[in-house]
Image 1 (cartoon, rainbow, N blue to C red):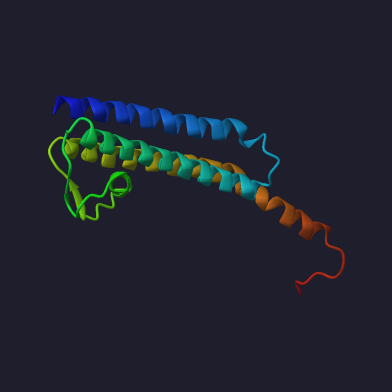
Image 2: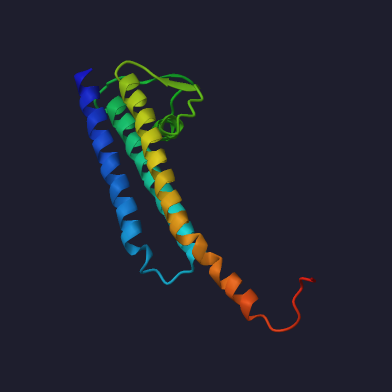
Length: 160
């Protein structure tokens, strides 16, 4: 169980650092991008999604290495074909979906439980980051439309 505790700790620290760097780089360079506000919001969402994808892959590799090299446990349920099943299990666990067609055995149970909690925290962090970006950029994509209404020449559509 000690190797699984060490692996879980290393994975949590690694994914937090990955997530921090992804969001920091996005935040630092978002203003430099020659994009309209709507596109900047898309960049924020894509960057967060890319960070989550990398983190799921990291856990997937960790499961595969834990099974193949360190023999810390395995998966029960459906027959496991290889790395793809470890990656699939990681995605289902990280998102807390938990379909149950695969389930961890022995020491992998601890890593899976930690991954679910880690995914929940990091998804919440991304949601918060996206909300802050939307709060900053959402009003900006309305300004040109409002300016165009004020500059419109001709009769007003509103009848008094």
